[in-house]
Length: 185
Image 1 (cartoon, rainbow, N blue to C red):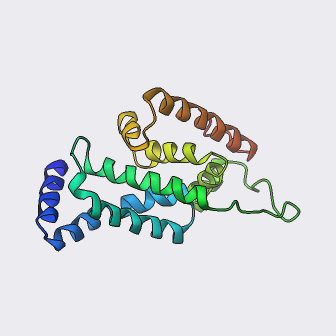
Image 2 (cartoon, rainbow, N blue to C red):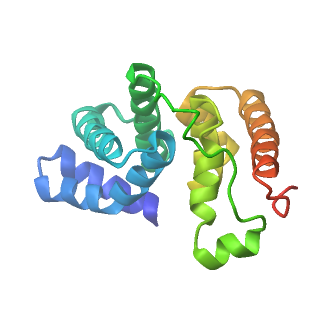
């Protein structure tokens, strides 16, 4: 049903109906923004990249061949916009004298009671490369299939699987170093 609705919206947008593009943005804005935010980790940059993504979608919609879902095509645009942004961003310098290395709470129950699971995972994800963050975000946060991730990133099927495997190992190690062992699989 969603695919059919997307096809209708695309036809309306290409016919010059501006309200249809607003409907498309309403339908996918939160999904694209959350995807971008999970990669970039900065709200202001995530808003900018999300806007840029929808502008590019609007300009390029006539080239969309519908070989994949519209959401997959849009996430591909967002993914490459994130990778471009990350290449341009200067690394954040951290004062190691005033930087706390570990967390004070040592088990998952304490984190969940305080609602900090996302913060802990977000902190652990900072240890992943940009490419790893993108693939992990697509797979776990956006629930994209391996096949969809291949279409979005341009990586091969086996590359995506290897990146997911290595990322899981890295995340388990980081979480273990933080004193969290309950999530290890």
